[in-house]
Length: 364
Image 1 (spheres, rainbow, N blue to C red):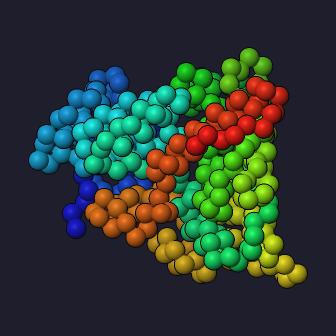
Image 2 (image 1 turned 135 degrees about the horizontal axis):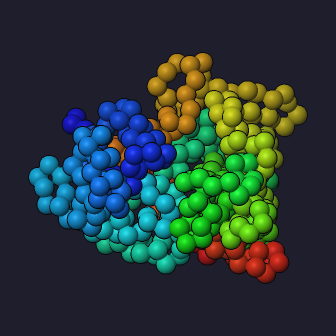
């Protein structure tokens, strides 16, 4: 099969996440990057495109219209801009009938999220959201264990995502936009809290109905949250907790999930992502590796480490299959519903924190 022709919005020279998406998209040979609006600055956009050998555009609207009109135009586009710039290009490409692969979270505001949802509802194209951690093999195995009833009834869910890189007011390109409410929408809550939210929902198959949140800006003068502690209530009676922080000194990228049921428990951590600890009631803990994974989401034999990049690549491979008409694994690929759920989580947590931790319904 010929590679799917791919475009990119954002991700110009020096951008972190754009390079990650480019590597992941080409890892399994399903995509070929051919065009981009890599920067809003025409000179920088052209220079970045020249480095990659792409057709260059300085405006994503022009790109959407021009590529839709070409016989060899792009079939999908990756949006790797800051949060506030997700909605406008997503809407433009969906209206042009071009599939959209968007970095998380869905948008910076509920209004922007609604714009994407409206365009997706009217488009023949598909919308995908790159919550990459849910594509790691042992996370998919954890999901399979819960789905088959290995844990029994779920009682407790605890998700954490801890970082320390924003523990002071040091300036950098990444820090600048992530601590700007206009560009980020939410701080730690949106940047990494939505990852923890989606991960817990992906593995358990459950979504909390209410949250009680305490959001803090611990660095003096920071206009956005950098620590979020959220209690979760599920319709089934399950209780949970989510802690997302970017001021946890000493933590590099501490994403973890623990799920406790009536028959067993499981624990997964990003820093040991190829291991899943499964502990049956009244039995010893079992350390599961990719040798026990049934999802087929890996490229090398167990013991040959895979990780962050491969998670993105797994998503791109599944997206390619869906674009080509194979929906057999569509249920494990995050999409618009996941994005809207994350936005509802952010809104409810902010409202709860403003009301001194009152329980607020998550209106997904």
